[in-house]
Length: 426
Picture (cartoon, rainbow, N blue to C red):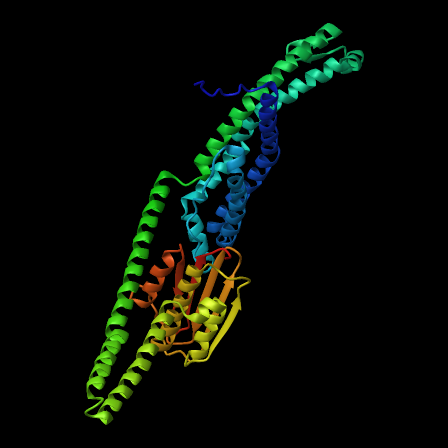
């Protein structure tokens, strides 16, 4: 049985591969260095303004956002240009907080300084690296231009032109320049894919997460998986407990009542009728408990009408006046809607039970990538996620979706609970 043979690369494949790499290097050489130089200068100036006037605290997050938009664009090019994906290494931004907290988040993120190093590299040595194959190809093409006859007017005006080590003063020397130009083009096209790959490797080393960050992310995912398992196990235990102590006990009692009524039907019909009536009452109570249990697992209004209407239903049932604002262009995945619903329910319960709020407001927004939930109240404040199980449970539930929670609750109020969950449309 013959072994499959691998097709040898043809001259067309070589030209296509080298030409595409050269064009990409040309784009990088033309666009990336000036942009990197401007951003590097802006970053240095914004950092210098922090001790001088304090203005840097407001400017640094803005400049960092510009830097990250540029590096994110490079990351999107990674699979097609550099032969591999480049993940984002940044720490999550604080949900709440003023400019000082945002500036601290930016300055405390090691990825910010690695972005700055990438800007410096791109504007200096990186520019020289990507320019080398482009310059070789360009110089080779100029040799062909001289060979095509352009050398003659140059010779008539200046007495000839040096092309590398050849002074073109005749057709024979022009053909020599053409041959040398061809070698330049071949060398440039040969180097271009390797230089592009090397540039991508350096870019990846500066813009991708470090090994420590990758290991930390693995640890976070392991913890998140463990949390999800714990939450699911706790939910199963709650359902089992509710069934055992509620509906199951009533159904057992109803069966015993019906059995006793069956034996008393002939000897004491009135007593049998009373026991049947008790069984009917127990069946109604068991049915209501089963309905409540189902609502606790997945409220029908949430399944049928979505998160917005389900939260409005919670607000209507709230004893305190509750204002709801919903900006959800489309339905979200069912697990996300369920987690968000119970998170809002818990925050609403806390506002009524512990904060003694007289007014509550809820805001739901989705920007296409992230669901943002804000629950505020005018209660007495002092809410702390580290104390008690309510907000801590919400944080655990949201963490299974890489969600986060931030609480601003000074003593005396108001309390603002903000939750963010990454979620695309259904």
